[in-house]
Each structure stands twice: as structure tokens, then as C-alpha cells.
Length: 334
Image 1: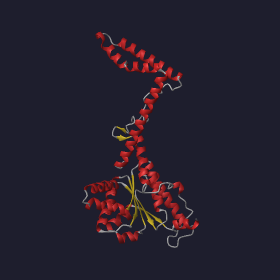
Image 2 (image 1 turned 90 degrees about the vertical axis):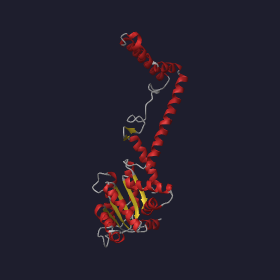
Image 3 (image 1 turned 60 degrees about the vertical axis):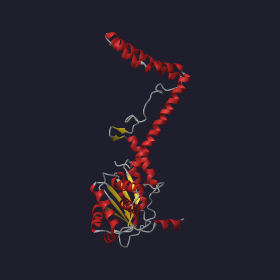
Image 4 (image 1 turned 120 degrees about the vertical axis):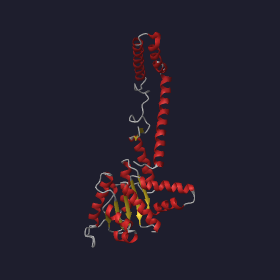
């Protein structure tokens, strides 16, 4: 999974903070136990010398090392039993002072060999949700809170099906796309329709579920995306150019890109080229994309190059949004 480097950095820092906090808590507990049970401290010091005793016993006089090693091991077991009894008598669990990682799978390193452990993935998902929340209002935007009450049950004069019937289908596709991400029949979605019909809300719902399931998600508006492509190519400031290059890499490399409000940007020849690079690059790499737009398919054909229109119509499953502006309906009902 192509996690953003900043997301991974913050998640790794949190993992280290948790590890440091546990070490401090364990050390504080150890000091507390030692004050209450000095004998436990003596036992621990003796147990730490066990390995030295075993090595000494095995080398002593070149004689058979087995009997002395067995004697040291027996003494070791006796000390451990005494230690457990003392801890229990003092009201502590018998293993209270054992140093155990919070994640036994990776030993709190976050990695199992070259593979990221589930504990670090969970932190990455949390950091990703936080990053998405800075751009999307994820406070109450989840599939459970999506309401069909604002969609009319009357048949649409052009589309035939009522807005509510249509949105029931749209909702199910979006829900399944998010929950079965990477395994769903459709790889890419194009949410098309007027303003205030739920496109951004459902995009946010998809982003939340996919991110919580451990995939890298990037959300951004079309205008900002193309501005970053432009800055990467034309900026004379090395730092600004480097930042823009990092951003465009995120757009191209994340597991799911949500491109919001396509069509709101100034459609220059450069933007056409950047959009084609973005769409075609992600398709070629097998990475999935959700695009929302106020444009109809006819508008797309008129606005963009035939190559772009062909890929959007041929490689994306189009979900049509229609009905009354929900924002206005909510305002009227207040």
C-alpha cells in the first residue's frame, strides 16, 4: 500500500511514543515493586547473572558442563517461582514485571521483515483519517448517516426512475465499492450531477471506509490538483517545486484518489495534459479513482480531449445524481 510519506512518518512517531510511554510505565512499576519487595530486586539481579553462570559452568575445568548447567537452570526456576509468589502476595500479577511488547507480531517495531505490521497499519489509517478530515468534513459523514428522505419519490421526467429509487442504487454501489475496495466489480467511479445532491457526502463516506480498512486515500479538489502539477513543472522555487512533486506523486501512487469537482478548473492545454497523465497513469498502474463532477457526459466530451472522455466513459462506472438541491431543502426545513 502506497501510504503518503507524511502519514507514515506521523504514524511511526506515534508508535515510538507509545513504545517509550510503555517503557517508562514499566520502569515506574518496577521501581514501585522493588521498594515494596526488596527481595524481588535481589532475585532480578541474580537472574540477570544466570547466563554468566551457565557460561562459566560450561567452561569450568573442561569437565562435563551438563551437571553444572542443570544446577544453574534449577536454581533459576526456583528463583522465578519465588519471584512469582512474592508478586502475588504483594497484590501484583505474577508476570507484572515481564517485558512484553504491545504487539507480539512485530515486537512493537511496526514491521514483520519487509511487511508493515497491522499495528502500524492501524496508526496509518488513523493518521490518514485525520489528514482527510482537514479537507473533508468527516465528522458525521458515514454511510449510516446518509438519508434518502430528501430525494423525491416522484418519477423524474427525463430519467424515468424517481430520485429516491436512483439514489438507493447509487448508495448501494458506493457502499459496496468502499467495503469491497479492490474486490468490487467496478474499479473506478464517476459521480455526475448538479450541486447539493450528495456527491461530496458519499465521496467522504467512501474515503472513510477505505482508509479505515488500511488503504491509502488521497482526497483533493480538481483545481488544487492541477495547480500542484503546474507548480511542479513551472515553479522557480526549488522547495515549492519539490513539495509539488511530492504532492503529485501522492496523487499518482495512492490506492484511492478522490478527485472532487472536476470541471471547476480552468481547462487550459496544460490542465488537459495533466488530467490525461493522472487518469491514464492511474489506470495503467491499476490504481482506483473516484471522480465527482457537475458535468454531464456530453459536457465532458465538449470540455476535454477525446482521449480523456474515452477513458472516463469507458473505464469509469458512471453514477448519475439528480433531484432537488438538498442544501436548499435542509435550509427550508429549518
